[in-house]
Image (cartoon, rainbow, N blue to C red; front, side, top):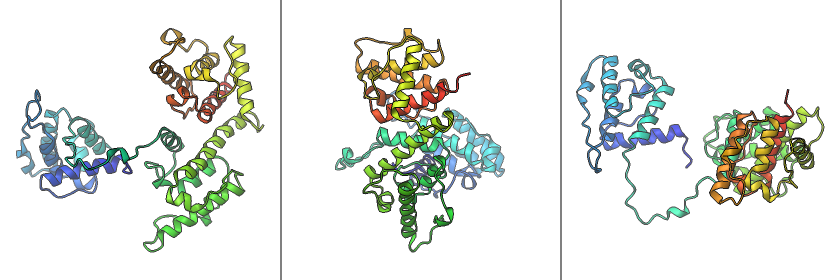
Length: 365
């Protein structure tokens, strides 16, 4: 769960190389230039005829003896073509070790021929292994959409040194004194102390500069990945970012939840649509208020003939929500919420949807 896509693919490749009795690779650039690792991976993942209806494909390994690197790479790609996986790279790309194109090549191979078996160990309690929640995925997607560096792959692990949090502070116009921030590479001895100092400074900024409500939150909570307290800070960061967008459009005037609801209802009324009582209004579960608002902002863009509007099942509500989120993004609203947030009427996330639509609506020309 904590591995990045690149690390996951590297682990997968090395698994098959070890199964083949070959040396491990450390990257998809210099370590694959001679194509020999690719040859052995192809030979491992090629169908063996074990599954009913899938004929075996024998990989011709003779090309691995070619002396010329480009010719050897071309022979390898000819074998990949037999597996339906000759995409993204040329022989020259392999020899030059183009990391992005080679990563795409391996990802395609992984998707089409993973060649993995379910573990035999039945003693593992798989239910105890927690996946990413919707709320966590929303925050992670939001942070990555802002271009934070490094990219956030595992929410709590990647925030343990607070460097991403400092970047988010700057996004909401809270000044960060980078001279007080410890930056990698961290020393082998005392590295966690350096990260903890960063987290303490992050909490201090939140309380003193951002004026966030961080009662009971300490730097240690961020450093150790306390889920509840970390999410409390992230919610306030994302909310402030969304409201800052609106304040920029409103010439610096403070925007509250009531301001957003008022704008939404005025816009809906002008378009002859039904209004809402607030972000907890049950009618939002159908996504119709969101869809009506999108149509009011950009008339004629919503295909109402595709929608179910009465006596909705859970599946129909989810389909409406998916359409609403998709159309909101299509007209240019930077929406971070998930369809399920609308169906379940999560007030905090519903607010971000309407706020982002308000930002889009106020840009109308």
